[in-house]
Length: 296
Image (cartoon, rainbow, N blue to C red):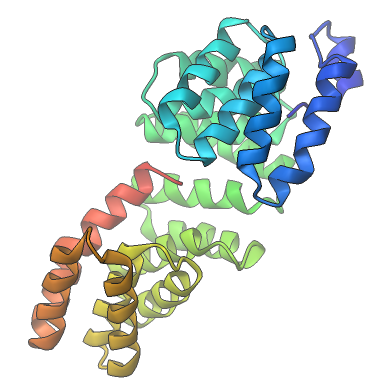
């Protein structure tokens, strides 16, 4: 949650008290194990003793967001920033969270973090990613290029550089950045799906199929990913895998998104041209645009 405390204290930046640090450390292992309900319980209790701790508020916001409590989490991040923290990690974390809600306060927090700590890769890439999604591509790429120089092995930075290249229409450059991200973190199905969609935009169906299928297998709860993989595999006449992906999607869609599954099934059962047209002109482009704009 914080960068090097000695460095921050030397700049006169407020760092966690011993009590706050003990709370954060207590919940860290729980968070690593995905026990976000326990993290939230501990932090809510701590908040009664530390009602003006931006660290407790921000970390609690992260826990509540993981639990699907977006509205409450949003208020926690707002409260944390209202306390005017100077810690660049906290600023970039809360700023990125507010950006998901299109809150204009996000920009100031992210910009301040990048200015306060230009040597901190997290602050630079989070600000760069924000700028990219706000349409400031050149400035955003400058921040991301600086971030990758600071932390070249960070897969998230390469993923965001790929998003930036794709949003700027540089699709081949985007595939290189996204491929690097996937190589650095082979378990990140989101990066693989984005890479597959970029190849689809370039008309390279075999490359698209390879990455979409791999990404869909990693993101088992991602209904749309299963359908994208099913369509492209059907177009390539890999029928067994296409039907498997369709069935995986059907299981995910029960009672919720069955209409889209039925629509894809109709295309797959029709001609290859129908499946390709739906993939290239409808589901593929809409998914690509949405995933460039928002990351889970």
